[in-house]
Length: 181
Image 1 (spheres, helix red, strand yellow):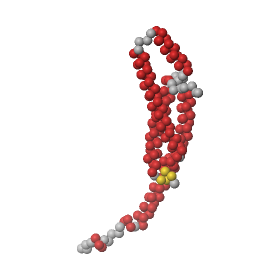
Image 2: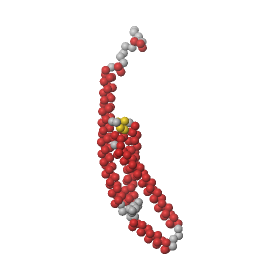
Image 3: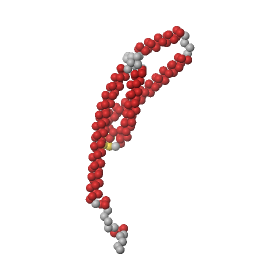
Image 4: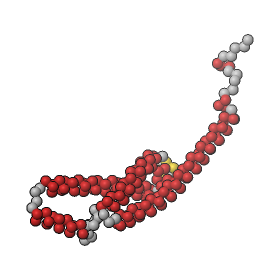
């Protein structure tokens, strides 16, 4: 009975065969092709999304301008806030791809474009600031109402305040609109 020692191993290493070499090369080619295909497909989807985003911004602005009362404005604004929250998730994913180089730039910027990515980030930040401003206004309104209801007003003071309120309501028909200088 022959015994094999580790020095005289007679079985060939499968990783040293031509079959293995071709399998590795083809696998890399397939992986690379799929990767490039997925990147280009994602880029086309994001460019289409960006066009839809531009139309969305125009529609939101139009609806905000057409709103006739605070309830309508808040309904449109809530839609804008929900979109900004979802957009923040997309922007964070694109930012996480920022360190991956692709075709001479960062992958996130390649997928959307540097200017477009910056505009998406600005939309998210601006909407967050606008939301904070609306919350501050709502808190101010609540504090004002609490203060007014706690005060004992004379009938003359009540009618003067009501008249002033109607005057302001005519000047500013919607929440957040100020006359231009």
